[in-house]
Amino acid sequence: MKYRRPGVPPLIHVSAEQRDAEWVISVRDNGIGFDPVYAKQIFTPFKRLHSQEEYAGTGVGLAICKRIVEGHGGRIWADSQAGQGTTFHSPCRSKGKHLLNTPRPSPWDYKHQKFLASAELHDILRSGKP
Image 1 (spheres, one colour):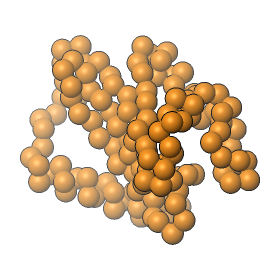
Image 2: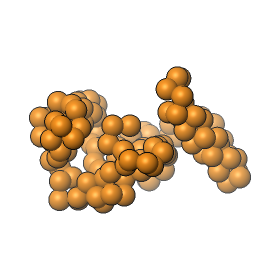
Image 3: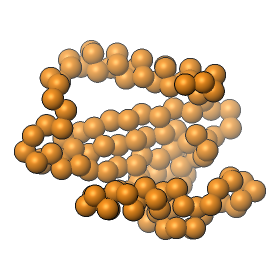
Image 4: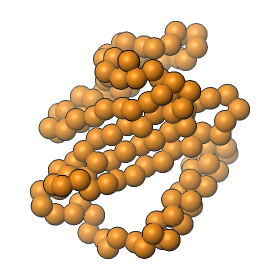
């Protein structure tokens, strides 16, 4: 994770919530976050919130994400607070059907799977190997 806080192990949480006729996919991290004033600017090509010396990059990553999502008729946005991580959201239409044809797990299963996914991701990030 590029925009991470020094000394804090990076964590990423992916979730989906059904809202009416769509599923909202959310990806949350515990990185450096940003001031909400810049929520639209981060999706503009070549607009950066940090200098090249602070964080390497070209400023096109989130612009590409936005173009892909909008190319499929969707939208993407981010919620954040400086120093507290960011959550990216993108809804997907379900066309009257559940996108996932699996029964909902019990709350215990969900928490257990979330814990395993976080632990596995943490191990992968620490080792640098998939």
